[in-house]
Image 1 (cartoon, rainbow, N blue to C red):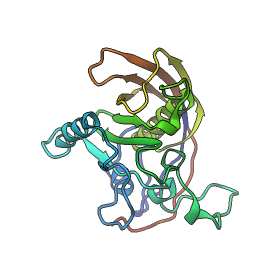
Image 2 (image 1 turned 90 degrees about the vertical axis):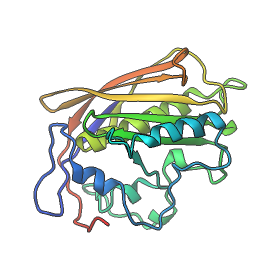
Image 3 (image 1 turned 135 degrees about the vertical axis):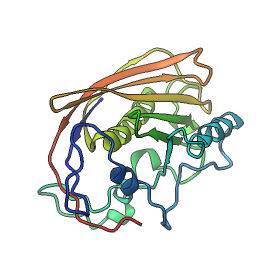
Amino acid sequence: MGVLIHTHLRSTGTWACTDGTPDPFQVEWFCLKKTDLQDHGQPNPSWSPALSGLFATLLTGTTDGSGWVKLPSYKSNGDHIRGLRLPGIPPSASDQASRLFTRGFEAEGRGFEYVIFFHPDQRKSVCLFQPGPCLEGPPGFTHGGALAAMIDETCSKTAYLAGQGLFTVSLNIKFKNLIPIQTVAVLDVQVDRIEDQKLFLSCLVHSPDRETFFAKASGGVTFLQMELEEETVE
């Protein structure tokens, strides 16, 4: 997985880090404290006991001093990266109807059920993923493309928060085992190193007990300078 990097214009008028060093402002900008937006990364009736239990365990890491942050998951990346304007591309009139690919299912439990936790200091993320029946590939198992999308989503969020990553330019995946539908897979994403203007990430997908490994992914990240319109973080 590769992600192009942009430089983030802060509301204070200074530039965020482009060396992959986590910026507290970046996380604050991403995780709104006051919003009427629906957070789809919260438990719902479709979550299995296994997913709910793992969520509760990881959630304790956000309050016990461990340094974890639960990332909200809104229906569109435009709700996260507010004020982003791509060069040469005017704002779309259909922005309100847009949905993130992994949040494209209205019905709970039918598609991607997931939540991401990010650790700023360690530059890593953990994603809990429960694929629904509409993500089937081989009978009873998750489509490889659905897992690729989930890896891309988790790596992209990690890269954005750890080093202002935005666009995927390459994604290298080795599939090892099939994920049964409506079971839980854990995605561990880590920023491995930074060299010059490249940020390197890796992802390991496994069962909660780590007895089964489903996939392994890795890639590089480069920098693209870009600006965000100034907004007040609530």
